[in-house]
Structures are given as C-alpha cells and as structure tokens.
Image 1 (cartoon, one colour):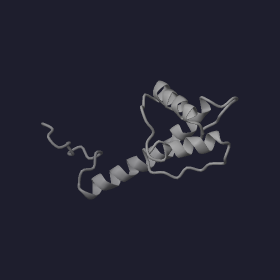
Image 2 (cartoon, one colour):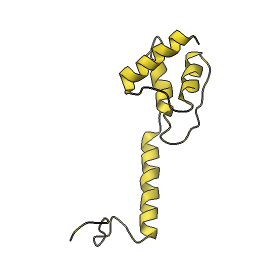
Image 3 (cartoon, one colour):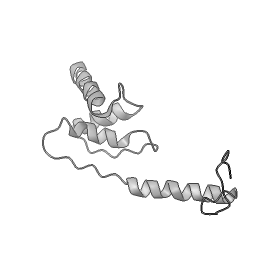
Image 4 (cartoon, one colour):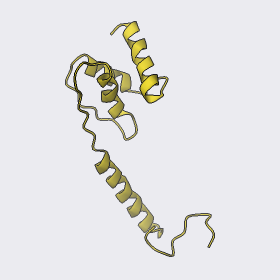
Length: 104
C-alpha cells in the first residue's frame, strides 16, 4: 500500500470516526481487508475490530456487510458485572444497595 493511500485512510479515519491514528493492529486489519484477503480479526474488546471493517467499507465499491456480536458482548459484560457485584454483596437489584458515596 502506498504512502498516499495510507494518508487517505488516515483522513477518512479522522473524518468518519474522529481518530487521528490507528490503534495497534487496526492498520494491518484495514490493509488486509483492502487487499481483498479473507480476514477474521481476534482482538481484545475495545480494540477497534469493527472499525477495521467499517473504514474499508467507505473506500470499497459496492455494499459491505459488517456483522458484529455487540448485543451478545454487552450481555456478557452485564452478566460479569452482576456476578462481580453479587460476590461482593453489591447486587444492584438489592434495594438496600447504594453506590459508593451516595446519600440516603
């Protein structure tokens, strides 16, 4: 990929997503998608996997479908928070529970 193409991607990254630079792993992901390779991105939560497919969609011709398990991810995170809270006795469904620093 040419330097001009990378600069164009950075401009689009800023225009569409408000970021001045890629997070670690994103640029390689975007390049692979734009090169037409089959890609499966396994990256940590919050690392910007979806952007790795959404940004190329702004450049590639035709329709791009990005499938993201966001609702499943959010459910997993809520379940983990509830488990963590209940093991500490801070169950948010317990009416006697109050956030730290709250007043009664």
